[in-house]
Image 1 (cartoon, rainbow, N blue to C red):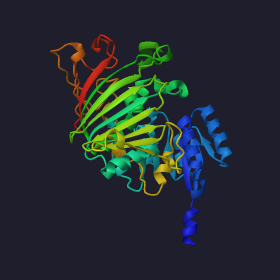
Image 2 (tube, rainbow, N blue to C red; image 1 turned 180 degrees about the vertical axis):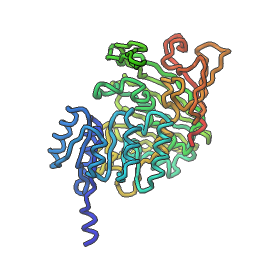
Image 3 (spheres, rainbow, N blue to C red; image 1 turned 120 degrees about the vertical axis):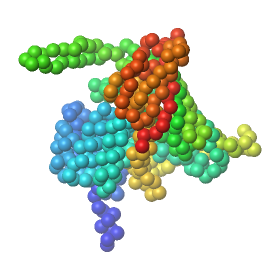
Image 4 (cartoon, rainbow, N blue to C red; image 1 turned 30 degrees about the vertical axis):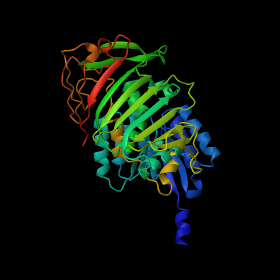
Length: 430
């Protein structure tokens, strides 16, 4: 009787941010209805998104309460778990409100945890003061069937000690979001934070080590170059006067659309990312290669296959494994992190790997004095294309220097072909 009652216990979910990703979470949770999951409330200031979520909830037989803000949702005691799927730049404030609320709510937050390392640290420290609350981060690539199979292969020792990890993502441009907030580094944290935190998380997972050095080159070459958005007039008051500091009525996207990244880990493993976001002609969006001292494993998404071979077996001995998990509905780049986290034998991605996944590049695209936890120095005795940024974490001070912005976005730091490069030494965040 007790087991039956436990099986029927309802876990109430609230969704903060019901745009594309928020509604994806609703679809995921609909698969858990037999396990007692129910979406009971949503919050979003965007009326069209709220209506789309209401229509979706009705299709699942859910009657939900709707709020324009997350604080109202928290105060009403309508949910046990809050899924945060709002734009990246809102994560910090929302997470702090949830964690510090008198009523405890467990949290699943979409990646990235926050857009700055300093904000991530503040969230982690706040969560430590609420041990009764679980905070998980939606780094769901770990749970995609082909990636999960490759993780299993690596952990089994079939390829030996990992020496190299190479990840290629060749895909379509960023999707259209509400007001296209994801076109700007200040909102998203930058492409390598917004999109590639998944891959840096996987590299660290495969390497079983923390990063110590990052080298990268990237640029804006193709996407969004013809887009223009309304900017802002920056205003303040001086006595009875209304003043403005600058007028910027037009803004163009500043997110990169391609990059090469090399990461060195403290155990000697090396990782490489090859990113292109104007490669719609690719058969697979992601190709992940892990090479050990006795073998190699590869995963392909969305083809959903894994290849494993050994040095002694050669090309003829390579095995092809079809990685399918019927419990998870894999659709290309989308998976079901909500479902994955509660599957038997799995655990959710906690905040520690989440902060490491953005540590390498957090806001390096738009460094401003006093705003970021980075200590910058530069080597002045060389040509601009060779200038180096040294970022020592977790200092909260940005030293005044001619390089108050990163190479990316600085025309005087660009190479002859218009690309940019930077070199970062990572000392950790603790």
